[in-house]
Image (cartoon, rainbow, N blue to C red; front, top):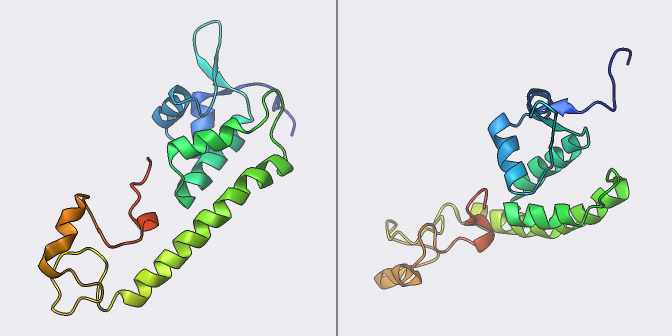
Length: 158
């Protein structure tokens, strides 16, 4: 690729365009310790090109349902001082298989029970497959779909 310095750091605009994340998300992820930036002598934020891999990981991990704390823990296992390689990514992505299998089982149970109940505990159906007599779901003290498997009740982004 003539004309492109593959060692030159990327600006916020370039990283945002290449990663699909808004510049505000990049600043947030930096504040959260998920990515690193340096500053030019003029004070502008710039990123090493390897940040694109970390951002791709963050996107994929978020889509799998990992929280930011879980993503941070996984990223903390990556080596410092060298670009993560295929073996590094393989090692940390193995944890996702369990999460995905759990989510698939929960979604299948939800799909199979949709005709009778979605697991919310709302008492709106005459014959609920999960049953919520006397509104026992209210005693759980948690908002949302009380009877859904926990994996389907996670708050996105946390």
